[in-house]
Image (cartoon, rainbow, N blue to C red; front, side, top):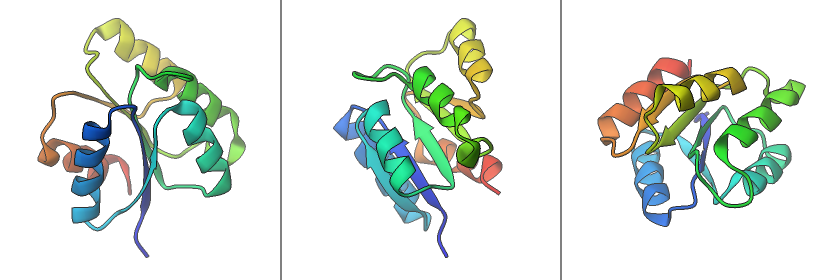
Length: 121
């Protein structure tokens, strides 16, 4: 059975690239446009991994990670930040919230898949 990955981003073009890359590698993909939508979808249908942007309307990526980590069911799922933010302070904030990894946009499909394979066992 294919692993299910949720991608959370308010940019339709990024979502399209991430979804195509993951589906091409054999993963199932669930899409959400912001953190609130992601939480609702996650509670309805758990996933094996979460890939989220940082800057989004309604609920940003850091808040989303904190909310996900509060739920015992999702405490250990890998969460990757996929964002334009590259400052160490932001990375530390993401790590403190519970992020498993960080990819800076722009990225290549190969980079994305390498990180996914590394953290999704």
